[in-house]
Image (cartoon, rainbow, N blue to C red; front, side, top):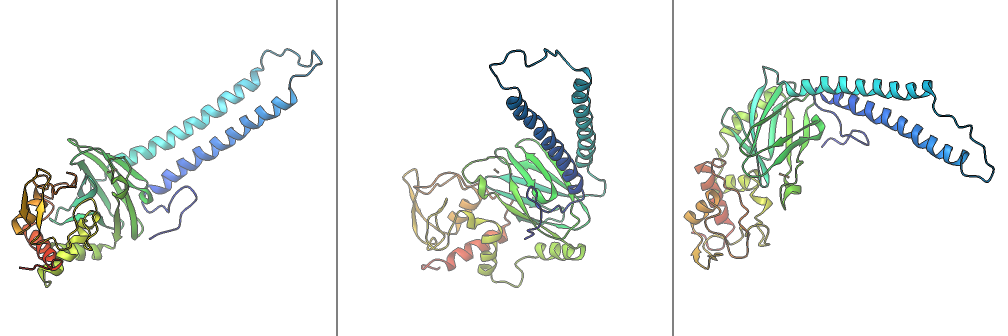
Length: 317
Ligand code: CUA
């Protein structure tokens, strides 16, 4: 993880970060100087012209044209500078270069998923090539989230029923934080991911590997990988502790009681249904908060996850 940067900002790793920082620093410095002058004069005048017993100390000056013009024109010029450079950078950030690769990003309570044109789907991990513009097409499955990559200086609202767009061109390889910057419920602070910037050849290899993922592994081994990469681990432990969802330890073959009073034995079909239609059977004591994984997991991946859960259970069959 990259730890360089300044007091105010993490290191800039995209093509626009330099410009964003320049505007930020200009406003910060100009604002600080004006703040110091104004507050300094307030304090100085309060002491210098404090109320005293002797009358007639002030001369009854009504105004000073030169002084008033100075303190009006200088700030106006500064504001125009801030507007000019701010708007120029804003335009640059809004217009996606024509040669950008497009990745679909989806926000939902409480994770990010990414769909690549090549058919690869990832959860909480956006892998991109360095020195290439990337367009991110954003939408939400539920409430408003916000796609925020501090190192790239981009932040964009992610809305349900509507697409928004942001783009970046990373000019430095590395791993960067992705945050949700809009309060979206109890696990908002856990809605974090990674942007991994790799070389063009690494990117192509990664795409290829990801589309053939699981080959050469047993289903249970692949399931163990998916348990992490699909972020099941955010809510389901494997050591028996209860999280936002039931633990996967000894889950297979156990009799589960549901919120509506019914019960069932946990088998393959129940697990499959719980992944695709989690709201159908809510385990007693838990809330209906799991999003559907419909479209996010392939049948092969569901098989692998079930195989993995079986290995975590005493009663394997
Ligand atoms: Cu999603 Cu906060």
